[in-house]
Image: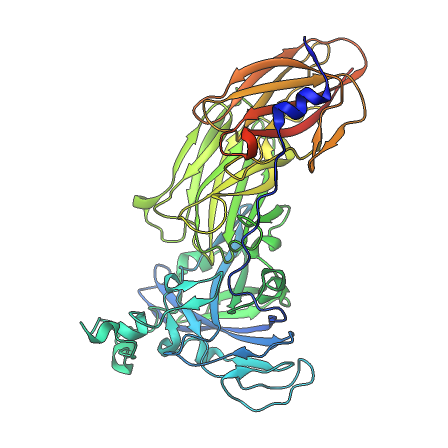
Length: 528
């Protein structure tokens, strides 16, 4: 092994400069609208025959202006108003899943400016005043005169273009030039022809007719100019018990409003979230739950992704795994019920990858992913979500959760340096390297077909370096290799005898990174 000193490392790594963040384009400091009441989940109509029919459902929502800015509340066809999204989920058989469609979204049209949130001066109008509340009852939130497709809205900026919108074109579309002239064409007669279910929150009887499930309804306000830091209170869930009465569904509330993602209600799950850069795009939540092992030694892994307000969508989800592990019973669930656009599911040496860029996890939806694996779970593992469309920020979101990595004695010492993709290369150890043990060092999330050097040291006191952690000095070049087409390398180690700690870290050639290099996290590996 060749000993290397710090000056050589500096020459090798270069100075990795911080990439300037792109600020949220329309953020206005002091904008803070909160969901404060979620109530009166109501049956609005039914199509088909129970238990194989579908219901239209709506709810009451109240918001408060907790900020220091008035918020525009103009009616369509003006673009400056909030939107209110709806969803219903259930926890069943260890999974938290969305059971409603990607439902149409309520467009705000007037604020009543009621008291109850602070020092409200009152007086209804086209703004939500500071310290005031606004309520849309079930009748308003179910009125298709104000419900439009979620795909028309940018949930990150709160932007909506009335020109060529659903309201502009009508249903069926009125034809050019009136379908795209910025004037409302959607008429009451068109709305009446939709029937009792269409464009409301749509839920199949089969999804509600499960007495062992726990149900939640959810709503979210999308507000122009609201900074990301103030959005946690925009959305929340409330537990409810559905009962079929013979000709309709009755919904009995079973708890209070809880702010946050529906995934926060998932019993026993570890939930993390991320954006694709500082204020570049909205937030996506990932929940992970592991049960087992069963009698055959297999663990069941359940994951769910909830896109709160990320405009680019999620088109790929990658979960790391120990090389050599056995994976079976892969499963995917989206919200449209069509098998034609289900995501592909691939198991390679280092990871399980679910991919569906043509059917991404859009905002206000939850997709589910699951499998069984004979590798035990390890917490705080790096998982990757790839953006489905081009746009601001990096192309990947990074979250942490339980993954089939067969726990080892390795201790993660800290972050390295991100690469050109915006993702930090990840070093993990499956198993151990002590006497009688056989372990595998795995490098993932590096560029494909590129050189990578594994550094090793037996010294203590890791060295902070440019916001990351460098293995202790002096250290050695333990091994050099080239990553495969997925940007991964696997190295084996076994049978060391003694009681000491080793420190390991990869340095990666990365043409997209500043001065051409990135660094993995560092690991401390006890050998005893």
